[in-house]
Length: 202
Image (cartoon, rainbow, N blue to C red; front, side, top):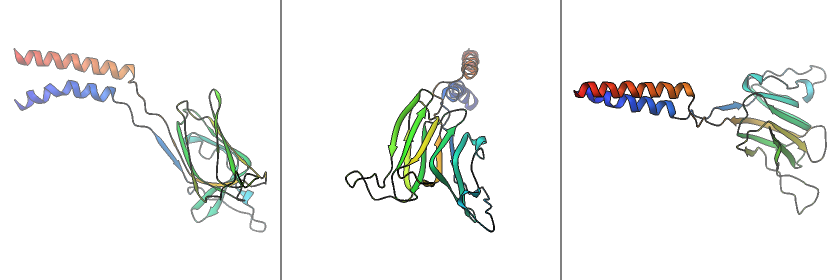
């Protein structure tokens, strides 16, 4: 009887597993896996440029450098840096950002269709009425259903260094629709389950 009871739930369970959306995939980058090496005589923040170090995670970095020591690293941007996402596009991106000179940092977000929206951090914007005290390690969160292709990071003052960025996290959307293969497997399992229940009841 126990086996018969279990068989009653096999078909629905398989079908439920087949149509259940996959959980969203998250990627985390804190730059601590890198080992920056600085010039012994004239060390410079510009000694370790970033580019495709995280291409396998779906991220290209332009006009920025990794700085730090002892496994405590971060990304330092120029006055106009960018993050480019390759392959599947994330629908959520977050990071901790600190303005190097205390001015505001402008972030422009682009998707496949082009410009989506802008975000302005804390910091000086040229006049008291618009400016706010800079927030160290300010949490920046960006969300869009279209997917984020580029993020440009621009400094208000236009100096050589813009902002320190750490703890970049981006998340891809879960898959709401099951694949045709999973639907076929679920359908076949349901047919076999019904036949087995019918045979057992005779």
